[in-house]
Amino acid sequence: MKTRRGLLLIIGLLLASHVNAQSIEDEAVVWLQEFIQVDTVNPPGNESRAVDFYAAIFDAEGISYETAESAPGRGNIWARLPGGNEPALILLQHTDVVPADREYWSTDPLSGEIRDGYIWGRGARDMKGTGISQLATFISLHRAGLELNRDVVFVATADEEAGGAYGAGWLVENRPEIFAGAGLLINEGGAGSRLGDQVVFGVEVTQKVPVWLHLTAVDTPGHGSSPRTTSAVTRIVEALNIIRENPFPPRIIPPVEAYFAGLSLSMDDEWADAYANIASAIREPGFMQEFQEYSAGHHALTRDTCTMTRMGASNKINVIPPEAWAELDCRILPDRPAEEFIETVRNMIVATGVEIEVIMAFTPAISATDSALYQSIVKVTREMHPDSRVLPSVSTGFTDSHFTRDLGIVSYGFNPIITERGDPSGVHGNDERVPVEAFRRGVTDMRAIIRDLVVD
Image: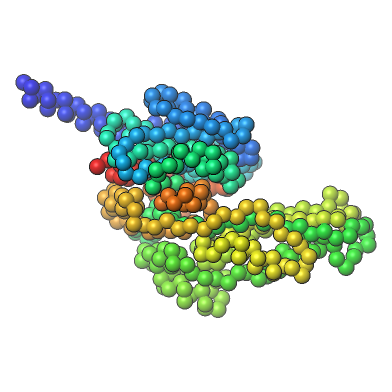
């Protein structure tokens, strides 16, 4: 009789586990819909609303947590599941999102509605969707009550979209205990995509370094009817034109070369050879222009870049202003210090008289791929997706991982969600959305990867 009862108990636990494994994906979909509806558009941010959202979930689950505001309304929240003596794992996310113009969307950007098989709304992909995948993983570990081989730390921060000064950067400076003892971290920046018949998962191990520059020109003001030989405006225009007409020379760093070579194995078009031999291809006449037209994102991984994004001058059409300005979003490859690049730009435009002020410049860093977390990613994705491959990748954009890499924490950008060829994402654009089923599968895969790492 005891044996029969024991067997029934085991069966019951297995069934309960199966039901819970199914329900967490359902919960994650609802959580994402609700989270998208929480307005954390930055500026101004108001990420304390996201803190309230997560705090309510943690309260319901009986999970202890801490919060801190770096400034009024700029909230951050973190929670910890205690484990063994292995270096802790941090699940890092940002809760702010970029603005969205309702006029150009097919729905309310903060609706979180499900339509045509997608979850719609700002942050569905960047990065509230990934954040909810991390939440579902964290909650499922807590509910399971398993013995963990390391602490698992959930950290949701403010302000990443504006540089992280009120979020991850502030926490590193003011709440260093969060990161003490951590050796591994997973954040945004990499995902899966289908190339040909194969799924390729890119794990972001480094990123181009943002160098944001403010250019200022000062000259004699006057009346628009009497143009002078020089003005603040013409100086700015000349400086910008010099930068535009003199693109920085291409160069291939080892992580990019390895990433492109890996991609070439799944390519079936005329670009496969170029990707396989990218260091040689960039030296061919006309290649770089064709490459930029083929893939602006991959082209950006082959050189330092500066994008002109903001300008200002006179506040009246017939007034030559005493001052004009412009701002550049420059991104440099992580193989040299930002100071060296800034000096290069300064020398390029010195004759124009335009002054350069550095708004923001991060330090370069690369995470190695010989960690237990990377091994778990490779192992689990191969099991869950037998036709897949994992490649270390380089991101053109920046994330908060640069803060943690500076601390010596091995940090990866990765969400195992798979984007099918031609599937729209709307990241930082119009109609941002994520397929419901792809999101659900990503939640399942994320849980499996983290569990493989933290449960012996």
